[in-house]
Length: 450
Image 1 (cartoon, one colour):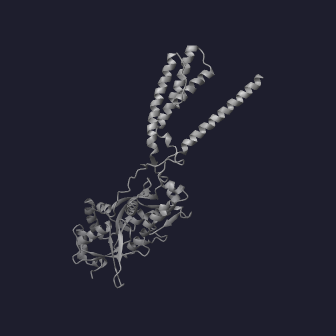
Image 2 (tube, helix red, strand yellow):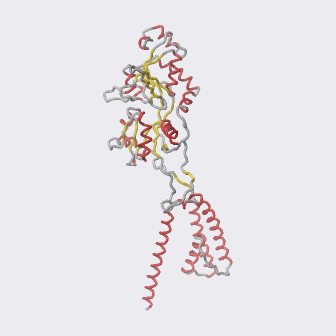
Image 3 (cartoon, helix red, strand yellow):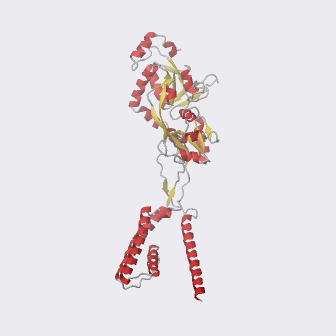
C-alpha cells in the first residue's frame, strides 16, 4: 500500500524536491492523497459501485473536476482515497469557530485536499488555501416558464407610444388650424362651428363617414390631407395588428431576487452549508437580508444536490418553488429535462448576483498547492476545463436564450382580447352619458322656454 502524503512529508529529500521544483515534481515511489469530496453536478459526480458480495465497494469521481484531478494525479504519480464528509456539505463556520463539511475535513487535517469546487470567501481563505480559479460563477434563480398568452392590450402595440402621441398632436393641430382659418375668413367662430371641425376630424381618424359640402378650397385641402394621413396610418396599423394577434407572449414575472422575495407564493430551494448560506447568515441589510428571513417565514428549503433535479421536475414545475443555484447548474437542469421531454419548460431569471471564483482547496500552506496550481494552470490555458464542462451534459445550449414571443396559429378567445371589449364598453358608456346629458339639457331648455 502506498504511503500517505502526511508520512511522505517526513522525508526531507522529497520535501526539498517538492519545494524546489513543484512544476516537474513526481512522487518517486508514489503516494496516497486523502481527498474530501461531495457531489455537485456538473462539476463533480460521485459514483458508488457496490461489490458483488456485498462487502466493501468502490467509489470514484467523474465530471470536469474528476478529469482534472485524475490528470494531476497521473502527472504527480499519486493515487487518492475519496472521503465524503458526514453531512455531505461543502462547509460553513460554526459559532465556536470550527467548520463543518469538507472545509472542516481540511482544517482538521482529516484530508489533504477537498475538491469542491469551492466558492472563495474571506472566512474560508483564512483556514484553507485555494488553487487558482477553475471557473467564475454567478448565482441565478431557476423558475418554471409561464404559458404563452396574448397580451389583452396588444391592439395598442402596432403603433408605438410616439406614433400615438404624434397622431393626437396632429389631430389637435389640424383642429386649431381649421378654427384659426375659419376665424380669419369669417371674423368669428362659434362654439358649434369649432365643435363641428373637431367632430369631423375625429370621425376621419376613426374612419367614420362625414359629409363635406364646402366650396372653400382650404377646407377641402385640410380635410383631404388629414384623411390621407389617417388612411396611411390605419393601413399600417391593420397590417401590424394581424401580425400581433398571431404572437403569444411568454411572461417572465420573476426577473430579480426582489421579485422572488415579493412573491409570497414562492418557496426558495438551495443547498445548505455553502458560501451563499454563510453570506446570508451574516448580511445585515438589503435584499439578501430579506432572502435570509425567508427561512423564518417558512419560504425556504434546503436539499442535497442529488435531490435538485427531481425538485425542478416536480416542485419548480408546479410554479410555487424556485431554485437558487449557479448559472451553469441551472443550465444543466434545463438541459437534462429537455433531453427527457423535448421541451424547455424552465427559465433563468435575468438578474445575476453573488459572483464567486471556484477552486480546489488544500490545508493551509500545503506543499501540494504549488505543484497542483502549476498543472491546473496548464489545463486551464488549454481550455480543457471549460471543454469538459460544456460536454458534461447533453443539449447544454438547447434552452438558452429562449424567445419571450412565439408565433402560433390558434383561434382567438375572449380571454385574449378582452382589452378591445373594455375599450368598446368604455366608448359606449361615454356615449350613453353624453346622450343622457343631451336629453336632460334639452328637456331643461324646453322647460325654461315654456
